[in-house]
Amino acid sequence: MYTDRRSPDLFLLVVTFLLLSIGLMMVYSASAVLAANRFGDSLYFLKRQLLFAVVGIGLMFAVMRIDYHFWKAWAKIALVGCYLLLVLVLIPGVGLTRGGASSWLGVGAFSIQPSEFMKVALILFLASYLSEHQSLLPSFRKGLIPSFLPVLLAFGLIMLQPDLGTGMVLVLTCVIMIFIAGARIKHFAVMGSIGVIGVVGLILSAPYRLKRLTSFVDPWQDPRGSGFQIIQSLLAIGPGGLLGFGLGQSRQKYQYLPEPQTDFIFSIVSEELGFIGASFVLILFCLLLWRGILVAIKAPDLFGTLLAVGITGMIAIQIMINIAVVTGLIPVTGITLPFLSYGGSSLTLMLVSIGILLNVSKSVH
Image (cartoon, rainbow, N blue to C red; front, side, top):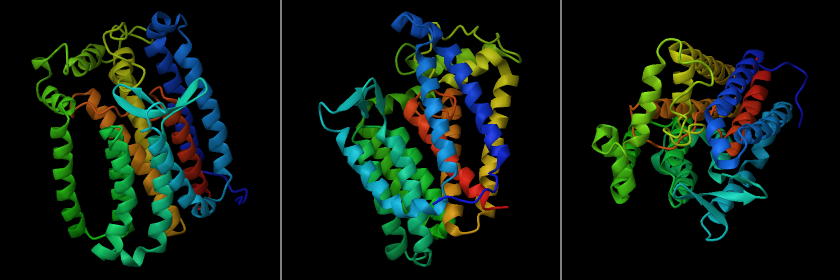
C-alpha cells in the first residue's frame, strides 16, 4: 500500500502551497465585506476555507504516501459511490438547492458537492479501465463506446441538477484521457459532432442558458440582468491597471460583483493586485501544469500516465474556463478557479488530486 521513501516532486508541492496561500489571502480580501454584512463576521468565509484547506492538506500528504496502484482496486467502488451521491442530490428534501441547481448534500453545518467527487472518481476509473483495455480503443464499438458510457451516465446525472459547467469539465477531462490512451481521431470527430449538437440542444432547452449566451455576445443588452456579472467583472479587471488598487482595496466587492469569493475571484485578484499580480498567479498555474505534464510523460506505466493526464487536464480545463469567463471570452458557466475560489469540496478534492499526482511523481526518478 505504501511507497518507498523517495521524495515527491517538491517543485510541484511548493507551487501548490503558493497557490493555496494566495487563495486564502484573496478569499478573505474578496469576502470580508460580504461576510460582515451577511453573517456579522468578516472572517466567516476565510475560517471555513481555512478549515477545508487544513483537511485537504492532511489528506494530500496521506494520499501522497499511498502507492497510486492502490487506487486500481478501489476505482469501481468509488465510481459507484459517486453515482449514488449524484442520485441522492436529486431527491427532494435530501439535496440542497443553490443558485437554481440541486448540487449539494448537507453534512452537519457543512455541505459537499458530489459532482466534485465524481470528477476524481472518473479519473481513477478511466485510468484503470483504459490501462487494462488499451488494445480495444481503436475499435469504436468495443473500445470507445464502453469507455464513454460511464462518462455519459455521470454527465446525465449532473445535468439533472442541472450543472452544465461541471458536466463539461468532467466530459472534457475524460476525452483527453481517452485520446491519450489511444482512441482514433476520426472516432472523436463523430463523437464531437454528436456532442456539439447535444450541447446546443441543452442551451436551447433552458432559457437561462440562452440568456447567458446572448449576454456573452453583448452584455450591455441586459446590464442589470444576464449581462450584470460579466460587466462587473470587466469593471474590476480593467481599472486594476499594472499594479492594482492594493490588497483589500477592491471596489467591486462592495456588493457590485455577486459572490466575488467564488467564480469571479480572479476579477478581484486583477483589481487589487493589477496585471502583475494576475500574471504571477497565471505563471504559477502554468508551472503547476508543466510539472503535471512532466509527471505524465515520465510515469513508469500507462496507469500512472493516465492518472497524471486526468488530474492535470481537469485542473487545466477549470483554469481556462474560469479565466475565459471572468474576462468575457465565453459565457458564464459557474466553474471555480482551482486553489483560489472559495469552496470546500472543490478545494479538498483538488488537494487530494495533487496528492495522487505527487505519489506518481515519486516513481519518475
